[in-house]
Length: 431
Image 1: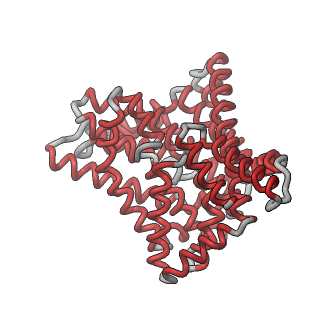
Image 2: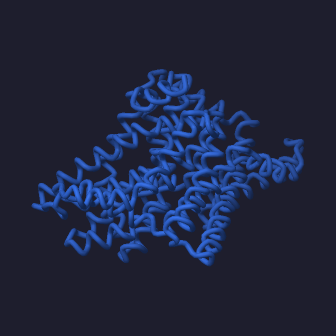
């Protein structure tokens, strides 16, 4: 009965439009109050506060504000324009050139921001305008921008990976390494998708290949391009932990914006800092709310019952992983990424491990599922960002993104059923 109160109240709160963090904490508080009143629960309601605090009291979570800050600094300092120009010089000569530029730009920016929304809002503003100016269809421009933005949380650094690593007790360094190959595969498949579109519609190149232009673009962009090298190189060679890598990324972004390019004013720095504080507060509030909710599910053995029910249907790893993928895809349509990871990791990770899936591989599977959810209504944040950036209706944005979900699903199938795609690099580096 109390579990029904917990779950039903959560659905009602979300249906009322309450923020997901308040819905999670509120339903948990209602469960504890009802249980304490009936004598079924001996834990006082003040435990909600304690669990929320414990949920965010984690050293690895310090990486969250620093990676957010680094991404915001890169956007504000105009570094995204240098990345775009470099990508144009590298692949603009290909058929459907700006579509390929869109993908390559996202791959590069992924090594700096760690979030799909930052990619869509930062690079997306430049990319969609350029593609419109060159006569590309607005639906194609929005669709490829949305799809390529999902590479951001796959290639390190990745905020969802940090959250998953903290909740699941998985090495964040190994998760970061595991995302490199799948991220590059995503880029390759999306570029093939762009080529097919360009061939079907008769699009040509958007820039002639020129070694001089490439050299000039590289000279302007080489310092921002060093950001992922610093982050991954520092972790691989043991110079710093993932949390310290986030601090290093911030220091390097400040060095570029204030010292090298001098494109970041002190007024902008204050604004970026306040934006980072606001975003971090939202993320950690969600983590705290999901922490108490997940703790209740674990202490009442709901997670164990769910695992037993799923495993009773089949012990076949293929069937179980298909069921988990479908569940995550549906959840991604309705729940914010951080909340979904915090709630579902303790439930689904043990099931995946029982059928032989490595925790590192499962982290990539979970994150990619939820990134696809960013392109689906009603909660897809990338959809709302690109609706504003492209100045189109939400419905048109949904229609534009729909065809580009197909290549992402192909990558999801690959990393789900072919473990070396995710485990080869972390095994090579860390094990």
